[in-house]
Amino acid sequence: MAGGMTGPGHQPELLVLDSAAQAAEAVGRRIGAELAAGRAAVLGLATGATMRPVYAWLAQAGVSLRCATTFNLDEYVGLAPGHPASFAFFMREHLFSRVEHDPCRIFLLDGLAPDLEAEAARYEAAIHAAGGIGLQLLGIGRNGHIGFNEPGAPFNSATRAVTLAPSTRAANQQDFPPGEPVPAQALTVGIGTILRSREIVLLATGPAKAAAVAAALTGPPGPHCPASALRLHPSVLVVCDRDAASGLGPRASEGAE
Ligand code: GLP
Image (tube, helix red, strand yellow):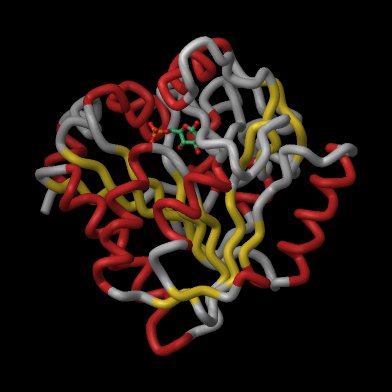
């Protein structure tokens, strides 16, 4: 299948913890280990409510991003970095204002770029120049999206402009001021780019993610469920709380700690 499930399948490692706070801490510790001893880590970073406690943990643990290069996964088209619903704003508020970092090595997609294709190409080139992403952090959408790769996105897709699914726009409406619509388009790092990361950590918490997690890990793989692409990667850790793992059945208790 072109752009679909090709190559050997892999079974992501699964870690199920009792609470969302414990799951976020486990992910925070994994990122902290990547940054330990001033290693020149290249991190792929995600936004969303799921990530807030991860970044809070990193901030209270006093980690430093001084030697790290970071690439955020996505941004709304048409939003300035000062817009409170922009992912640039989210990252400043939850992470970059709270941990030491080198502003020259923080990469964000520019939602105001006049030429979206050129912006996507610039980002791909910057990831390549940094030596590729080492550790990629991911959340998951209720429809199985990763970044803003919505259902139907090819598994070999590069960074590009995409049209958001109506369900994603509805889910994210809460982040926007009343009466202001969620943008119809976004820029996102592609699934193919995500799959070239050395290692991937996906965090899912809460009952609203249970169906997406189950579809990603145990359903038929394919572009209808973007997160199922992670089964093409040899080094994926999926960290869930019990609610998000509740659709996995016996496999979840096997993976439980
Ligand atoms: C967002 C982001 C994703 C994120 C997902 C889940 O819109 N584009 O990167 O993983 O939706 O967000 P939340 O953690 O708020 O449920």
